[in-house]
Image (cartoon, rainbow, N blue to C red; front, side, top):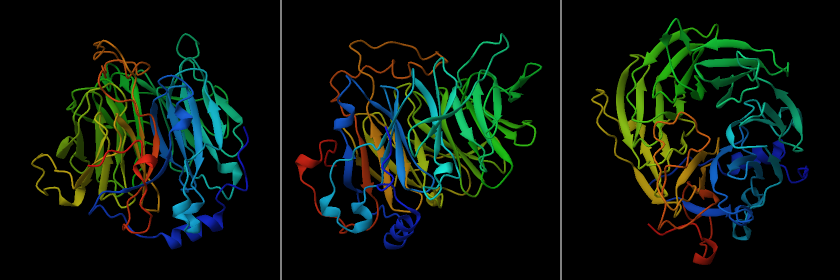
Length: 420
């Protein structure tokens, strides 16, 4: 499926959009729903979403869903033509189908729609190599093939490009493999997280890079987070296992001073002070009673942290109001609103506009199961018994700037929203 080049936001359109809508985020009142995608996820039974991520240049967004398809949506052109009253349901311009459950996916950090050669997405799925997808035309561009000590192909559980895009870091059981993006194939550098029975155990489930220091963080299903040197992969610090479940997501603050971590079946997002590794500054509470990844995100300034929860509620915290003495008191949310009627698992803040994207859904079961001790995320939704919960599989865009810029939309146009 080819992407419509004419429908892609060119560099001048993005620039004009940034100039026209350069308002900062405003969480003094509930964000306003603009549009979304619902019908796309009804073709397959229980096709719940599993996250969404804006492209680095803000021109489009990618979603992951239970049918193992990555979908790319362009930013609706009505948003930069000021015809917001003409917004209709979004349709994907690209679909990239993986062969099995998608473990992780990420954008190339230097992506810009002005240069199609930079438009690609990395994804990892069960029993498959790491794939590099062309996000302009939808073709498979390259593959990285990780092998274990038995020379068997093994799937990466987490992916993250280095900030300059020259390397792709892949997380496995007690090891990180680093590929050079200009050399597809099987050649890679191996960086064990356990050396002589010392270090970080478990499957490396999430990876993030600091934008200020030559350092990256790894979270594992053993409930720990480790800080590593980009130069040689040496362990700089191992943070205590404070989470109740395995880590599923982590983020550095833009200034590099803080690391935010969240786990599965864990109600806390913890803020770690990296100037004093091991010290928790404060926590933020959300309702998470599933093994599914529940993403959170920071705005570009690092002030606002947003996260969904199992009940479909999105919470917004103002990190600048956190107590400075690091007494670990829970930080109360600045705002909460009902974004979906089902689990809000994905949240992504636009890189320069006051736009927030959310994704929802979860696997449905008649009977609850108990796989809390499992270290694999292939069945990450299996512990959730969602009887009585209305199915809501959707990708939704929210305007989080000053209200009054958009027209009111009727209840019929807002099937995924409950008035809070």
